[in-house]
Length: 235
Image (cartoon, rainbow, N blue to C red; front, side, top):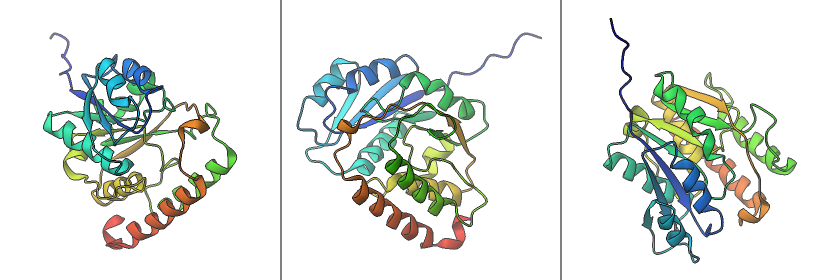
């Protein structure tokens, strides 16, 4: 008997972006080596993010105004489904994530071991996130984990891979950063197989415009709200 041929799976990278003209080109060029297409959801950038992204080879879907990371990620989801993607990989536009680690994040889905994979910054020591941000992330992650059999180490990482099953049943309604928790709560409710893989992380304070305290409090409140809503179905 001959060797079994692995059927090619269509992988799309989705990159939400807002005012990242200096970083997004390199992110796209690296990601393009590992995916079939790169989609950039430009969330009303006031700079040349869209032009730079197009020049780097991405398909850019522009919004006339800034709606938030959740809305931009929803655009990536919708476009991936419209293009009949087997896998959607999401990553940040600011260079925080190493796009060359895409194969690590997609592998569990390709191998049929997971429906959703989180690239965790806390499964190794290759990160330089400030202590106060780590503390905030740990609080949010603990709120997500408490009382559940399904636990994660990095609920706020947006370097993720979603397989067909996840794409078919997950829907983003949160416009802001709480979407990252919303998707995990939905995934747990739907019984999706969730896995984590270690990733590296390059933190650049210049790429984060929001007050981290305000951001953390907003997301923490959202975690409680999302978990209390239809609570019994989340376990």
